[in-house]
Image (cartoon, rainbow over the protein chains, first blue to last red):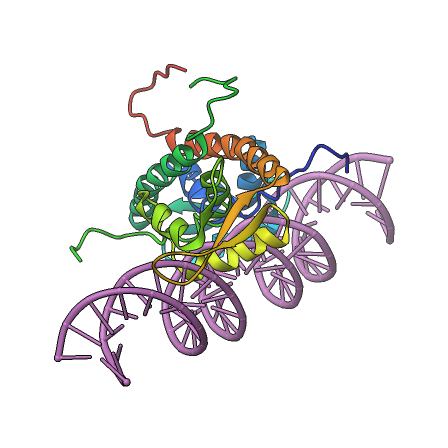
Length: 122
Length: 122
DNA sequence: CCCAGGTACCTTGCACCGCATGGAACCCGG
DNA sequence: CCGGGTTCCATGCGGTGCAAGGTACCTGGG
């Protein structure tokens, strides 16, 4: 590890949000687990592995936020496709509300009293 | 509780952020634990209790992100005041970076596909 | 004088979830 | 037949928010 580059452990940050990011990606389409890992891994700031997603998907299924259906693949074992339920859609929009409030709270706290260097503008 | 108001458990969301919210509030001033609970509780979306803050503050002290000093109070037991260290300031700004990236990732995922018309402006 | 209630500190234990690890089954090309 | 890609899954550890409970100090009322 280089000094001066104190990387912070951000895995705790992702807690409680990955779940809904998955739901968000499932809006409108069916997708399978491995695909979700690839998709979300490509988003900057969203590291995700199989060890994360499969237990997560099991929980979503158990809570009836998604339904699943097996389908054959031409290049590999069969895939389990996930689709949003009504409850899943509602959970997602509920979360979006809570997220907005929380995000603003954190932004506000981080910005307050930070008027020295401003190199980005929104 | 009204029906149709399915509140989501947001405590998971707070994981890994409260710590830095505390550091943020400590920028420039000294504050004591009980005060921090009251301050953060007033921010919308930031529920916090003593059971959360004291273990958290202990950890911050152990990691040398804050230093403390006892001071008498005129109305009650003595207070332990917390002050940011250099390491604390650095940890805070490191987090702010990571937070911005993560927040944008979540925002992006939540917004995508939320539009009914098929023309985007970005 | 004592005791209820506010202030202020703290510890202990549970629950939750991200992720590392490891494994199974299927297919293909060499 | 063997290695490597794809696709699924289960298990266990570790960090952390929070509820519950405990101590000590001060003030005011009965």
